[in-house]
Length: 185
Image (tube, rainbow, N blue to C red):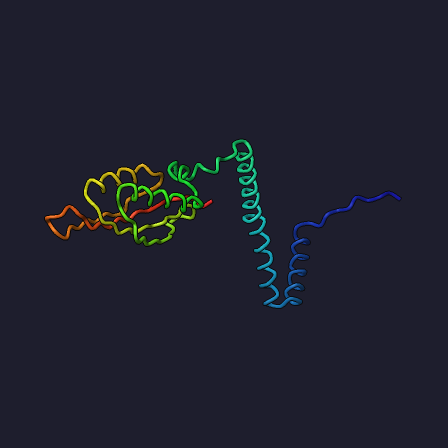
């Protein structure tokens, strides 16, 4: 016996079979089952047409970024300003404070009271120690003390108020507000 080649059905037969299977599927699934089947088919089309290419594109960009980082490692201090890199660390607040007070005492001021306030000026790296120092002295002593204070690292004069009680005397009531800046280590 000779094997006969299989003949494919013509288009009319295929269309009839397709209609019959679709009618059977609709009868078995019902209206809501058909809607669910359409939603599943739409989700698969969206996954294949939109999500998968997006994931592939994202993975490609990630690989490119990692390759770029591997070629040129970043300097971690590029983002912070040069001035912040030169600031002393917060462990140096106490010795720097002693140095400031000794400068004032060397210029003839008696430091009897000092108010402190510790704050963060807006970023995560720097800290500020604010000092409010009431003093009493003369103009030349104040000028020399201010010149010496400005030479200290990371010291900022926030405000200076002078008051003379009597016009006949050279004695001033001085209110000096300073800030010591430092980097959190």
